[in-house]
Length: 372
Image (tube, rainbow, N blue to C red; front, top):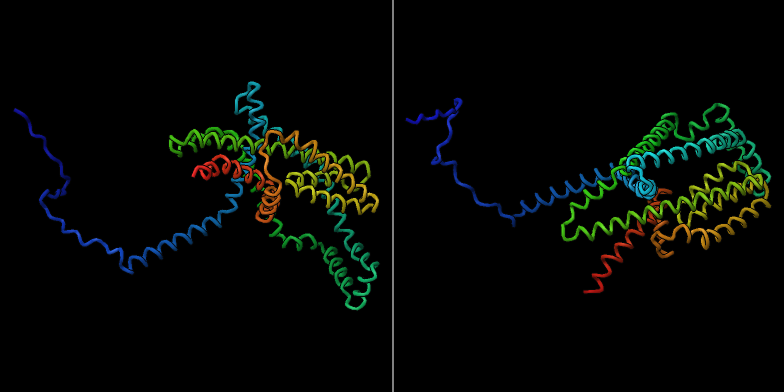
């Protein structure tokens, strides 16, 4: 005899299948003005909220883009050590160690002269302002309006009270915020670059899975080509900028121009910006040489222009042989737009981004346009 399994209700009564729960109403009239107005208002609110959220997090996206850019640029060095038998994690550690050692050496060489120069500038600021009276036009304006005397008195009192640097940077809180934000941004970029560099194959393979299988092979090949060429461009541009910095340091030491280490660092940073970077570097180098003598400034200007020609026709073609070549007009326009948007960082990022866009146009857009 089969036993009947007892049912457990725990004090609740389950509704019977025949129990009626009411009838559904008429569907909403999508042509009703209230319906359209509600959807439009909700969409506008959501769009404004998303735009404000993206604007508030724009600095984070900039840091992520910079980290991805640096990871792509350092990836060829990692692949170099991998081809010599090192595992990827050890190759990443070696590359990061070399980068940290290079940055530390550069800071140790450059920061003391820069601090000394700033201290000398602050101390000599009243005398430099007073020397403006040697110009007849400025002296005449000062006689009638007392502009130079008032500026000199203000600067002298600020330096005497020890408030010159603090007020220049917006007070103690302003200085603290600037230093803290710069340190946090640098640390964030270093950590993100390390993670992206260590897991770059995993990140790219995971991103490829969002693409349909029929197009996955094509998208992966184009993306890998973009990453390789960006890496070649970054490493090549850094090498060219380093050679320019060595040239500037040698020339400054030979002509005994003040603060040669700071000049070399400035030329290196400007050399990272394609095309327009050497214009900035040459201008700054010439102005520093002008503080010694006009003859030194003329020599620096002529030799720097000669070096730029040597770089354009001999050094750059050999180093940039495997990177993506783009028209000069596109390079200039992209660099100018990048500098106007993000400053020096935008100028550095603009050209490889333009190169990637041109590669996509050549491989995807133009073939479809030619067929249709």
